[in-house]
Image (tube, rainbow, N blue to C red; front, top):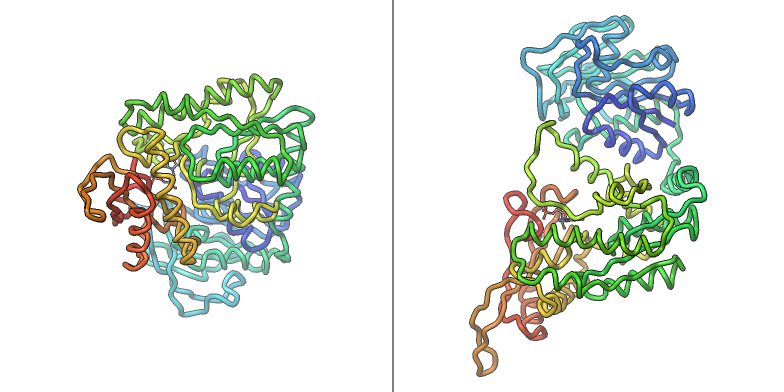
Length: 512
Ligand code: XMP
């Protein structure tokens, strides 16, 4: 295994992800707990992360002596490189101007990290983000790549198998970064690369058992992939100590509630409480048109209903959530200062404190696509695993203006037709999210010989890798006109269909 020592970089989890992609198991330990993790894990190599700190700060985090003197292969990234040099006898100075963003490095020499990848004389794109820089190398190190701003962009000590780089190989803006990390864990550390999601499953099951013991766990199912995968994993670990609660607020897509219920009760035989709270939700949404007011009401009502159910079930000490790594980063502000709330996301964040429960979050270090792999591993059907993301507040934020049961029904029909056509055209998996929006605008139309005066439906489809930015999906005109015709013919209440051509930014994916 590989130990990743975390000095507090925002992207440390990406290092773990790249190591997983290379088929190697890793664990992240904060620098002040790294010594214990090192002793426990007995790893084959160590990766040192970046950090917002400076090694020149007397109180800056340091590499524990046990690790530094272990003789194991090490890879230092950014702050990791600087701390290696600082602690092994090189020199680091604070630069007058840092280097931030894309840079090109010149390969000056061969090195084990470049095997089969980069050769002397080539130039390659990398992602830099540093203020301080290494100005002289510790004994035994040689430079193997340089950039205009960082003469020691990559350095190597082959004898000690210590390598270090100023740039960040873990981010996608360093296109070959994953391969550099793979070379480190496979070639330098000699690991075989046969670790898979099946191993992750086993490890997590052990961890869940150790955490929960013989106590009871409640898990809220949203209908989405994340909470479903979390529930399956936990059920596998502790069986019927787990109860799932599915709060249906009447704002789900066509057939969604039925699918969740039959999957959990029928297919997996997991105890599931299905609460039809649609009347409560839709009553509360009467007259509410402000997007944030809708979001807050739904979030709060969800918690109220969930809490009531949990009390009825009784005796649960743990609350399970399908929190993913991007949820964890998004909840941390990058600047350290207050960040602007664009939308208040619906999750059950307030629940654990309110109910005095402890959290079980087995997916906390995974990314969406990894959760899908794990879901397949756990036997979730492909149609379920591959489902587009769906927001907690559901259709309520796809119906600008007032949300009523009737408008939800209209939207559900239009949305189902749109998605059916997308699936039939074989486009579903190429799209991050596709959905219909029902506008609070009526326009005039003519059908047969009669005048119509009905609602407008907008179609949205975007591609994205993480939901943070998005591009519109460029359907061909024939496809869109087929969908528009079907919706207008088959859905009473809609007489006009438009396509949303806005990327994110400046738009958001959802309309509210
Ligand atoms: P926006 O609309 O902010 O959405 O561009 C980005 C992604 O987040 C989803 N989304 C939510 N997911 N609870 C969720 O779990 C929410 O309240 C919520 N609001 C938006 C949205 O569907 C897209 O995938």
